[in-house]
Image 1 (cartoon, rainbow, N blue to C red):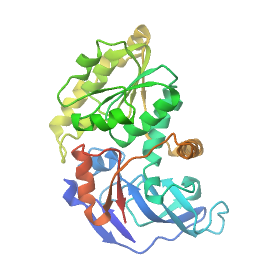
Image 2 (image 1 turned 30 degrees about the vertical axis):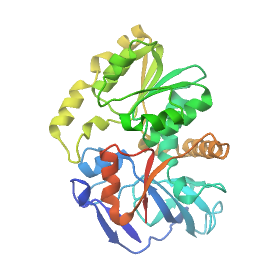
Image 3 (image 1 turned 120 degrees about the horizontal axis):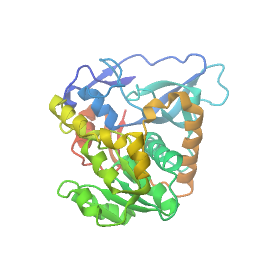
Length: 337
């Protein structure tokens, strides 16, 4: 098999393509011949050394894959060789062959190509957790989505339109035309505009989805109406370059609105703050599996419209990371073994 390794911390060029024997299945496991592996911001942060959950180096990261089952343990009855599947992986996803527990898999429906299927697990479950499980979005809600043009931002938009909510997004100006046609009601260029200054003139938000962190969380709290909720699902402001910056980390941590998110203040302002990290949901596999099947069903109904920005060969993995560092991607970047 082929794998992309992080041998040491650094910029995207540290990534190495290596070969190793194909893994063997154990009890309760299946092996997947990988068609595509998703690239997520957590992978970049692991390479930079600012992702606390990352495995020790050298390591193979990657949270999601799609492919075809090519080996099944004797005690597995739900899956067979030849089944088309998508799956969450607890790291190791940057591999051409991957062994997974049987309950990590979801069946890929007819009509959904295998490569595109790899774009669904992380973005789909993150958006579902924020909007359906925690945010409880309903028709008429006003929702602000940061990083609107990324994989999670586009998945969230599909769910917001499905629920009849009004979606406002922040994204670079180059992405605005695409995002308006896609369904965003209003857009703010975060590179040239202060989103709080632009949006505070309007009525407040019922929900804000924020993967940026630091000062962005503080501004978001100011934009919530009574009953509004801020969902924090990342801290991309810690990764302003392609290498770790201690100064940026310290600056962003000091900008977190610690005094605004204590229970007394939240109670008096009738606001809520929630956090989502799908990498900490491994103890909830059964629930996540139900949600994943619901997401796949919504794809079948035409609600979910996955966008794949690039299909990058394993040998060019560094370029895939750079696309996301530079915020160039519309939707998902995938690695192809």
